Amino acid sequence: MRLGPILAAAAVATLAAACGKPQDSASSSPDAPAATAPAAPELSDADKQAILASYPAPYNTADLANGKSKFALCQSCHTIAPGGANMTGPNLHGIFGKKSASNPDFKYSDALKNAGWVWDASHLDQWLEKPMTYLPGTKMSFAGLKEAKDRADLIAYLMVETGHKAK
Picture 1 (cartoon, one colour):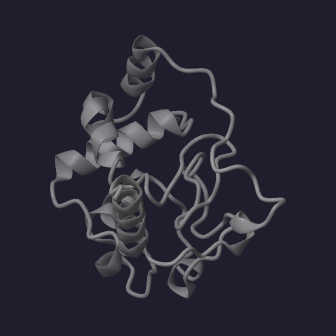
Picture 2 (cartoon, one colour; picture 1 turned 180 degrees about the vertical axis):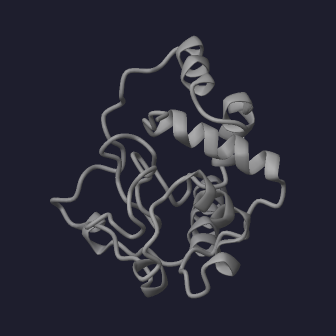
């Protein structure tokens, strides 16, 4: 008896249950984009540090490695690559400066559709602390990140990796 496929199926089922049911029926259609978009040119560590330094405090001194490790909690539901697929959650590339619930190819909760804010570091920080408390009625079942440093590191990582330009 081979347990590998059984364990893999159980892991996929567990991840799917943790994020909720898929909300984007278009992603399963034959015309939907592939699960992974073509890779963008990889930034060097020096490039990433230069971009990071252009951000306001506390993001300009964030730990990108910790931010990347915290994003591991998000990547079962979200992609961040340009043109990346929507999954249980929407693709997050270019999220900074966008109005909440503005991805036309994703089915958002009514709560997020009616939020009416523009995603910035402040909103994202409050959201990541505990989404269901910050916005009652959201479909995002993520428990949140308690530590402010972890949230700042994750936000800085997302800024760098999703193409956010400092103003």
